[in-house]
Amino acid sequence: MSWLSVTIDTDCGHAEPLADALLDAGALSASIEDADAGTPEETPQFGEPGSPTTPGWTRSRVVALLDAGTDVDELLAACAATAGLDGVPAYALEKVEEQNWVRLTQSQFEPIRVSGRLWIVPSWHTAPDPEAIVLVLDPGMAFGTGSHPTTRLCLEWLERSVTPGVSVLDYGCGSGILGIAAARLGAADVLGVDIDPQAVTAARHNAERNGVHVRFDDSAAEIRGQFDLVVANILSNPLKALAPAICAHVRPGGRLALSGILAAQTEELIAAYAPWLPLAVADSREGWVCLAGQKAA
Image 1: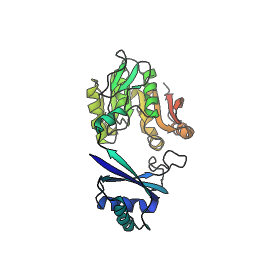
Image 2: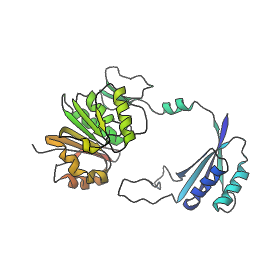
Image 3: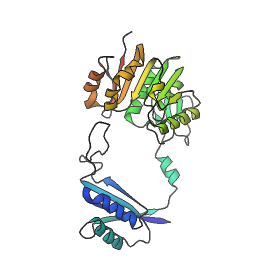
Image 4: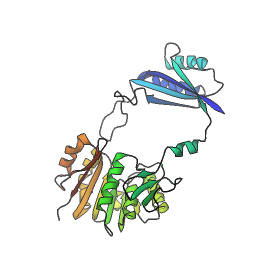
């Protein structure tokens, strides 16, 4: 079995009406992308909370999947008219053959070596190093598979910082990868919190799969007391707003690490946390930084 993939470049104002018209006319799927993706003109659509974005791309690309027997010219003529376009737009056509989509998707996720002794391994792979500390983690609904630079920075900080018996708080746990790593590295008491109940469900599943005991909750109100180590891999605006709450859970003499911060945001984050805890750049990668510091004893 095969299908046809049709790609049409258009402007922001016509992209959504055209995609809707294609779906109404029987397209199996229709998506809108940035026609300048992968170039210096690429425009992000989703910023962090508190940062305004402009909806839509000036140069948009509509990609639709069609049945193999579709008369593409006829379909596009009708859909273009519905969307308010003048005539049939130029398009590119590609044949899509049936594949083992599960295997194809899995092939895109290989084991990730975080350090000499820490690996992240999808469940369908065998750990490359049987002597390593292995975190079994599959791509899922929650952020944090180890491939993003901010996750790697936090994992590396935890590996340097966790000693047997310490307590760890992961503020904004996502998939639970940081809390699970802390437990595998020897932490005795680990708590992860996230406002997304689905992330908490995924984190609990991942902890069970890895054979570690980590508490996860979807309410920061459940955080009790202070911790030896606190890590928060979120985004700069939420990190600034949460500064008093996050620092309140670092024990005197305890340490804090923050990531999800672009290099250009470093100074404003350091200033935001200065009343409670001095921060400095612990590491950086691909334009992202990890800030870390120790609370006064």
